[in-house]
Image (tube, rainbow over all chains, first blue to last red):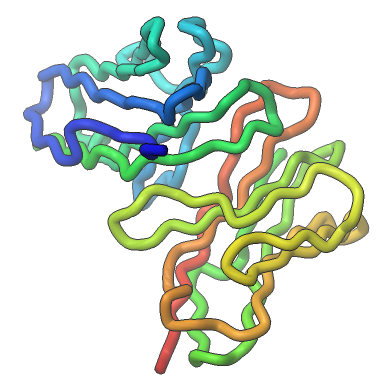
Length: 114
Length: 114
């Protein structure tokens, strides 16, 4: 069974632009969560989608948004990029939602904002 | 404040030596507990998890962890480290009865000397 895939793997953008990252979960998984990883703040939860509905959201500004499609694929969008948005963005999928869910992580998208 | 603490930022051990990585949490009720590993350029992989029951948990790759309620700790151990274990290790929790968001510690980077 294929793992979680994220595209693109690397991205360079300029301040003020917007970006869309994509995540394809493991087949059959209905929950997708997004995380931001930076050297300073570590790993931080962005949001979780389950069956096309956002279930949880982290403490990030409204510039960060996401959605999930009927096939469980998910996208996250960051508008008006800032230098501080440079990070590794990780997507994780799981069969179900809830605190006990076992999350499988993709390799991440490395975003650099210049 | 609620938090997950990994006191050691960087640990170096010799191949074949034993390993213990520390994790402490500060939550009113015992949260769900997880250990993840991240190899360079990779996403995170779940090593083991604890929800309730037997306080010694076995995971993949020969790792185990012990939950100690009195110390609010969930330390990760391995009897004999292999060079391939060099990676960054993250302790994570999901607070029970809360938002079900996964909260990560800052991570411990493990270097293995030959």
